[in-house]
Length: 117
Image (tube, rainbow, N blue to C red; front, side):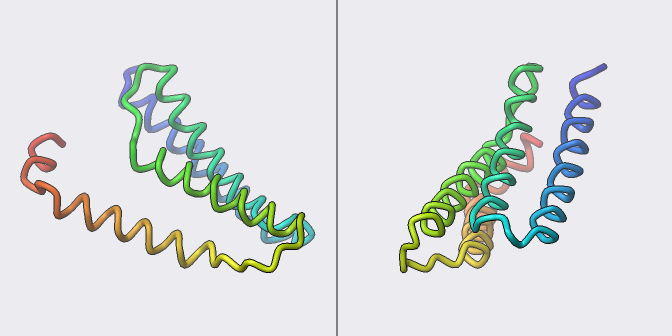
């Protein structure tokens, strides 16, 4: 299997796992806060580990999002388990970070990025 087809297969598996995990965390509200985000982070990091092992270029964007999801999810989980009063709105922060990263990617040498793709 060529690298492009293998990468598509990995991405399809990751998207499937993402939606299944999202459904599971939506159905079982008894899971501690942060577990959903941590699972998404693991899926995104796992996608890039599979790419790396298969010698397919990894995506710095999904690595960043995976690390961010793991970090914020871990913070939410620790906050829930330790009953801390600090409130961190995970989803709005994630949307803002995604927007900033995409905006920065578009502003930093957009012609160079188009030539490389």
